[in-house]
Image 1 (spheres, rainbow, N blue to C red):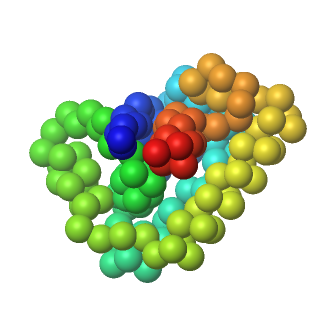
Image 2 (tube, rainbow, N blue to C red):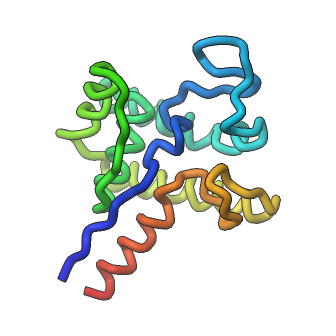
Length: 150
């Protein structure tokens, strides 16, 4: 029996859209209170990887790459959209797949980020101290475990 897993906050409160940078939000100079500078610095490598993968996939955004990764892992992302442009961006995550090699690299980078956050005893934006900035990472791990058990 296969049990689908829902990925809660798959874009990590907007972090994986690429609109947050150290000391500011892309829409202006005001700092964001959602993420600390250390969190933003910590996720730089994964954001750069998503930008690179998106470029190789014909100009996909970081949000589309993140959602495609989650879908490829077998989870169902719960995505909130506020307007038509965001809905179109979310739809751009479907109809293509990251390669097995891309998935492997993505998994490795996430594991490195997790390990570094644990090493620094950082709490994530989601309040856990397991290290994952991606709020859905634990759900994806649970999904992998459920697949092995079935």
